[in-house]
Length: 190
Image 1 (tube, rainbow, N blue to C red):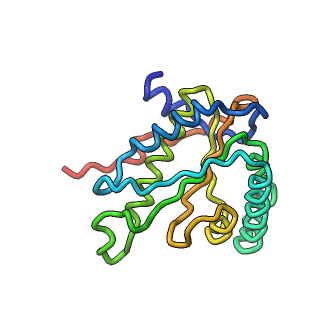
Image 2: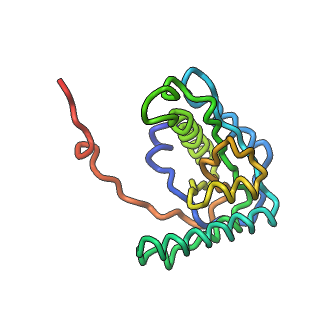
Image 3: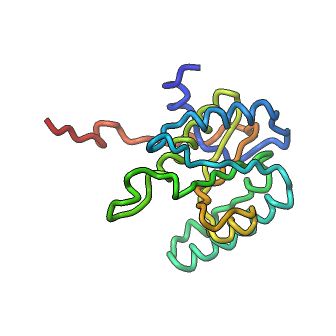
């Protein structure tokens, strides 16, 4: 598959078939992830592959708690209809964990360590493109309290849960979302 086609056609999937994802496909997706760029080649990512339903239920409960909190705090009415049931139905969830100790020179800058998070985001993008190339749907989910996800997944408190990536065979076509024309987003400095 052409990379430009994959970038343009891949969309977030929120409805998954109950079929398991092949271990070989999970491995290929994670291999794509580790080829992402990172500051000083620190490769600050770790991955937790979740297929256990009890753990998915705990993550779903945490997401619902955060949605309720978000609705009460922000007043954003759309949150009242936002569901996170895909956390229960996705055959696989891959937690992407970042290590702040494996960042770049930004560790010494005034605004602190963020480069390790950027590297993890690049790994996540690779995961999405690899999943799409394998005929799988995926979703990047971040609506959770990091402290609670650390507890649920037994993550060292020095490390940062960056995202939960839901993966599985799509149940139908993902919603196509529009993009602004690239010309609206570019500034050239000559």
